[in-house]
Image (tube, rainbow, N blue to C red; front, top):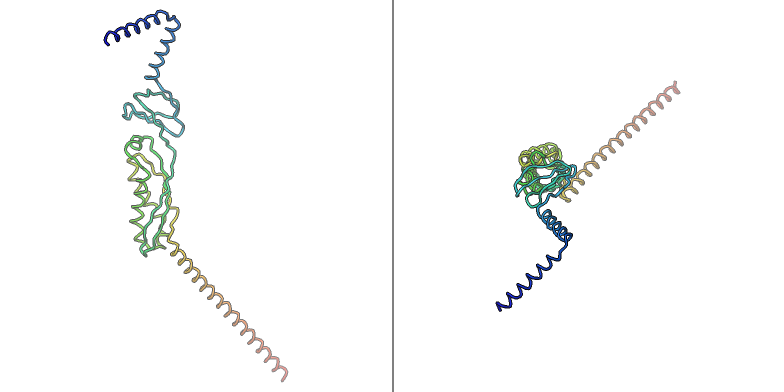
Length: 246
């Protein structure tokens, strides 16, 4: 078995030497090009475009190195990477449920407008995982600590006050993590359907009562005016009879 293996290896080596001897200069040139291309592909420079409105976060061996501005940039794929991070303003919609002082369940819809601070992109990208969830958690905390101290009518009237409280709380929590809070909008205060129907019925009854009062006042004025006209007519008739007797 060993003798057969040595014979096969000697035959293979002889065939390789014969192929190398028959190889032309052009073949050697093409082989060199292929080898150099393979080396360039494995360890090369890769171009990349960073779009307008974004920056490219640069990492080398997984470590943050900084960021590049929009345009053409190059990096070495095995050792470094560039990740596009948008600086555009984003909007996150959220829904919160809570109770008022008079035990009315409210559904509050909010809209948060925010963006990443370019100067703190490291904190925004690597130090926080789910920014929208954290923003919504702070909004829920503010709403559920503010609205339960108000009745339903006061909650509608204190919309601007509640909005200012949300902006202050969310800014204080998210700006250290590289997120700039532009604005928070309280877009809707929605009570339960039964409460809304009851409120509409109360308003309808109040308006009907006011309409009845106004209608009664109008009838009173008509009756007074009719009585005054009748009295004036009788007075004039008496004067006429008195002149006739003279």
